[in-house]
Image (cartoon, rainbow, N blue to C red; front, side, top):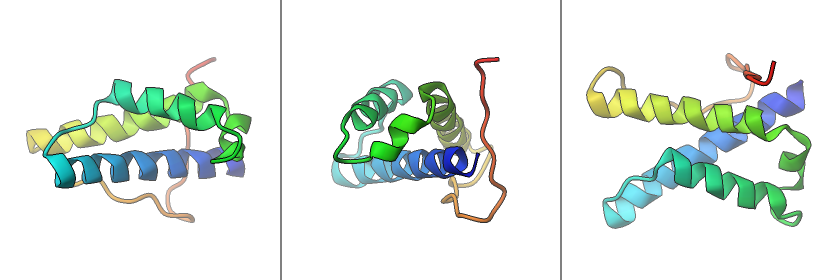
Length: 98
């Protein structure tokens, strides 16, 4: 379970960083669909992040969905800028396969 939580945290932080960099460099946003596609490529590459392939993709996709919702709330003015996920904080993941 700790590995699942850690991988979700990593996926969320990477998604946040990707969105931040895209906005800084080219003033464009990154869609949830694009990030899901990038996640598949990242999981399939055994040299970059082999540990991600040990976690079901649905769990990682849900983490990306949570990040997307956080950004939607921020852009609509309903919430502040999404926080970085830290080890030891409120750690959880959701498995929508059941």
